Length: 265
Length: 359
Image (cartoon, rainbow over all chains, first blue to last red; front, side, top):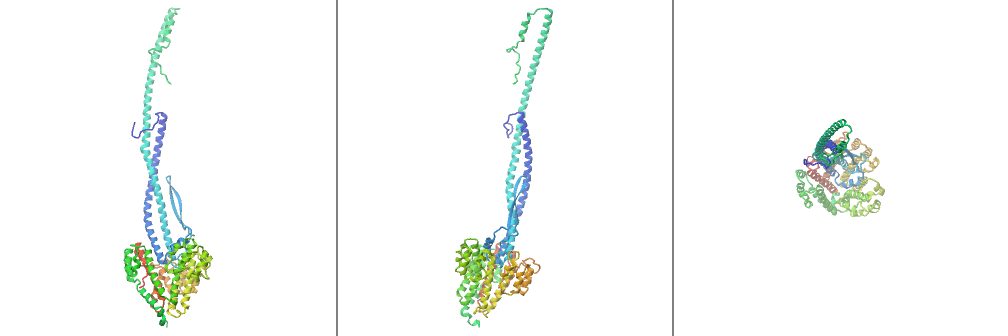
């Protein structure tokens, strides 16, 4: 009908006009809110992307140092300590705690690493030789894992934010390009229909009042005629024969030429 | 006097080992190795010295497989020497393998304690520490069985006797067990070279005593330094110190009471050599960085000293101690090559010179 967005299937009544108007208002408020949310998320998203870049570069460096410190260990110990370390490690020294962070309604998981200083399961490894290197290597790797944890929390946030930003942007666009024009169209349609009804009503009222005027004029004329007649009768005393003849026009002449009164339901 | 009859039994072995010594990489070789760009180049440079052993490696092998192949060569050569030896010399060479056996047994005990399939572990054992009854260790499923029926049969039974019970195997940290065994081994070896009728009063006794004393002191110092900040108590620590060496008994006693680097430095100041090491790596300055100024750690200093001693042993004649020296030199060489190839593989050339070249 009117516009590409179409309109909603409603009866053009004043009540639905009110509904539509509040709907439009709601859509506009929602649109501005969502727009702001999307902007906040995008800002955050950019920041995370930057930090991921930094963390990845840092990881490259740290992992290299860590791998090298392992080479130092194998030089100092002169053998493979991998199995021994694996078997003697019972409790995690390096732990990760997950927290949630609320960024404009989106819950981002945030991993936090901490070390249990008391736990040192393979502290005796390399007691005879190379123990210091083993401990140093462990510290280097702990730093490397710290970087990895940081990167992991950033990456998770990245993926979640990406998804949420997509959804929010879709909603913003839907409100902006579909819901608002459609509601506006509906309001326009209801308004035009109501105007149409108003004009009909006005015309009808005019007709009614015209008929009423005519009726009043006819009644006046009759009254006037009767008064003249009464005046004539008063002059010619006692003549009552003419009365039945005069009453006949009083009865409503349904088939007559005069208009019917409107029937209002 | 010892020179008169030594060559009857030991001449061939000594000759062979001196030949092996000549094939060790020299400073020139190491120079070439440090110029390499890839592991393949390293392999190529090693080809004259290692020949066939590296041939089966795939292109661009990992450093560990390279080291594995080099160890294979050492093992093959040592086995040949061992097969030629008789009498006291054979016993001496067997003593050399006990150190590796201790490592292997510690590995298997770890596996048994954690109820792993110990058969897989056999592959990880050091081939020099292999002995006939080693696979039998895998039969034992619990530690008591292992102790009562299997360990007794091994050559190491004497090292367990009197110092470790089967409860100890269960309760003590494997590192403590390993170091207790090692201490017993060193003491037994020391006693052997000093009392065996064939070695008494020969250069063997002289040089090996010196070497073993150094080894004992090194272990004592290392154990002390590495035990700071761990749950190892002072009494337990004391039990791990070998009861001979230049530091024994006063130095050992001081070490056993040491709480920090200062005390260790004080304890080792009895011996001028060790004091020089501590000074060189800067441990005396209130526990500054263990790395030292020129990237040398205490560990490096000890290795350096060990290599010097090994080199000097070759000036002696008529003694199987050259086999010991040769093995130490060879092991250092493997470590050096591993270090160099690791540096090349990880592109960290700035510390590539951090190896110990002896010749």
